[in-house]
Image (cartoon, rainbow, N blue to C red; front, top):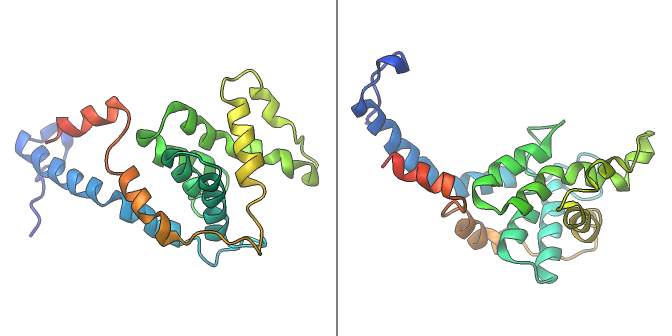
Length: 194
């Protein structure tokens, strides 16, 4: 049986309680890549009205980025940029960015977090919206970087004839990616509960 904390209120917890919680957190972190991959698989056969399902869109985006010589961090961001679609109908980019944040550079975090509004350049006008909403960020240092992501890899990843690499190809990459946080803030948090 799993050892668990015994408190009913955090204000009455003990160091021993937090050792149990900390050990469980370490075990959960070790399985993060598998949980992310399982959630990505939920996008299979979820078309949302698009020509390809959401998983295929993600695979096409990642395959295109890798074929263009992008590094592994960027490719994983491309693969996971829409992972929040099924849970965050109104803020899917925020969900993806939050999942990725401990493991990516600030530039890639910003790109994933804002790709939704940048992607709107290609379709907002069909709904009577301003397709140039992304211009509110025109002075941001990652504006061009994010616009390029949408232009080169995201907006064109709905091709029913495109041969993307299968999810299994990206699994080792995802496992490496989630093996250790990039930011020292999150690394320090890991050591504080050991």
